[in-house]
Length: 95
Image (cartoon, rainbow, N blue to C red; front, side):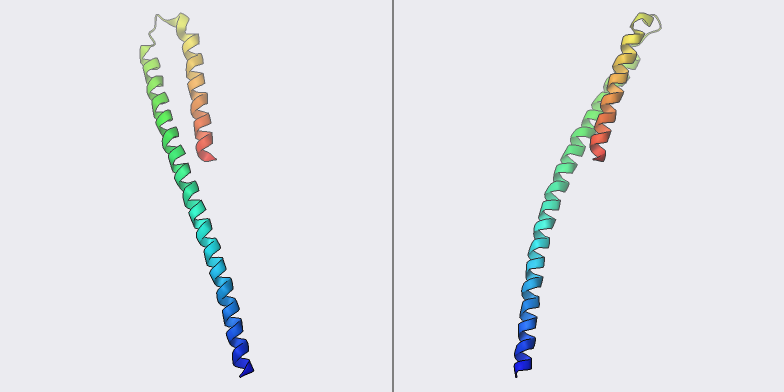
C-alpha cells in the first residue's frame, strides 16, 4: 500500500511540475507573439518608408536634366542621403 501511495505522490509532483512548465511556456508564447506583432508592424512601417524613398529617388532622377550639371553635386548628395537612410531602415529590419 505504501508503494502505491509513493507512486501517487510521485505522479502528483510530476503533474504539478508539468502544469507549471505549461504555464511558463504559455506566457513565453504570448510574449513572443507580442514581439512578433511589434516586429511585423515595424517591418510594415519601414517597408512603406523604403517605398516612399524609392519614389522620391525616381522623381529626383527624372528631374535631373543634362543642363543641370551645376545641380548634379547637390542631387548626388541627396541621393547618397536617401541611400544611407534606406540602409538604416534595412539595418533596423534585420535587428
